[in-house]
Amino acid sequence: MTATKNPTYDYDLIVIGAGPVGENVADYATRRGLHTAIVESELVGGECSYWACMPSKALLRSGHAIRAARRLPGAREAIGAIDAPAVLARRTAFTSGWRDDGQAAWVESAGIGLIRGHGHLAGPRRVEVGGRIYSARAVALTTGSIPVLPAIPGLAEAAPWGTREAAAADHVPPRLIIIGGGVAGTEFAFAFSSLGSQVTVLSRDRLLEREEPFAGELVAAALSDEGVDVRIGASPARVGRHRDGSVTVTLDDGAELDADELLVATGRRPNTDDLGLDSIGASPLPAVDDTMLVSGTDWLYAVGDVNGRALLTHQGKYQARAAGEVIAARLNGAPVHDGPWGAHVATADRSAVPRVVFSDPEVAAVGLTEADAETAGLNVRAVEYDLGQVAGAALHADGYAGRAKLVVDEDRRVIVGATFVGQDAAELVHAATVALVGEVTIDRLWHAVPAYPTLSEVWLRLLEAYGRPD
Image (cartoon, rainbow, N blue to C red; front, side, top):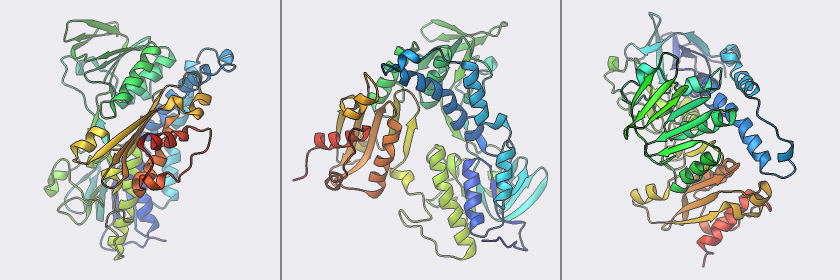
């Protein structure tokens, strides 16, 4: 559909932030005939393309492949040492050398205007970029999230790596300390350990504390087997950077750890800084409904990490598709389908968010953990199975270690949570996501026959552990 310019406004829609979320909002709205522009102060393609999803997974993949080969007789004998410079070069290729020419060309080809510079609200339906004011019938904030730096004395002055610096590193430090045992901390621990760093992970709580307890336990054991020093319950008391570039972390028990580099991976928060929200009387973290419309407005949307609902790229893109469509529907006077699971809402944010930790073993989960389900007041029953006992897993790798778990709402007899831990377990999570979104009953799942011998046979084993229907 060709966009027709509204004579009253510069654009129908202005999107602030050209990461994957912003690109999708703009693309879907443009397809529905809106005259759209996107504003970007850094690289078109955003965090995921240049400093997160893509480069970090490129750093991980070679190590995963080597470990997988070493678990197979006949393959392990052919494996030599990893080539760290080649891994870094492949990572850089995935970022296009931190150039956004290709992404910018796509924006132009999609019929979306590109405005370079920092954008912020300058009042209702007004966006300021570089001193110029643009007007729009609707505005979407898609500025993502930024890392949180803990208040540890000396930490900021030590200029530690964040996840950006780690993903874009041009060398492999001989010794690396990682503060944080969440998703980013564990992934980078595997990546840099495989590249030759002696890695120490400091985690105040168990690894991957938001997932089922066995997930963090299996990942911690794998890291230890890899030679990583995993310290659970360790709290840094202060940090110091020395003249030779090395860094010392002093723990609260007085122990000192030395390294060549320090990586802080202690979480992220919505990036609402300097967005001009005060110009419209909005709070720093705008509340949104399921169409991503900011409460108290009929023109402002907040999509992806910036709204704080589910800080995951794929979930942000899911929100973006709904938001782009509903913005167009509202501005075009078309019907809006905003009931649960409608075309214009992000209902899955509430109950069916899939997530993967690309550790080795991988951790793949969707929906609620057993503890979260109980906290929510659901009447649940959980069943687990040793994934290594599945025939497909035994063929996949010698000594395959993993576990799977289903959390079932007993009142509705539907799955409300699933977790899979094991080599290549990420490929199991989409089936669970479909089951959650479709609210497929346990009785019906017995008729979803897994192919043999595959990892998916674990579904049958979990159902057997739960018990056949009467």
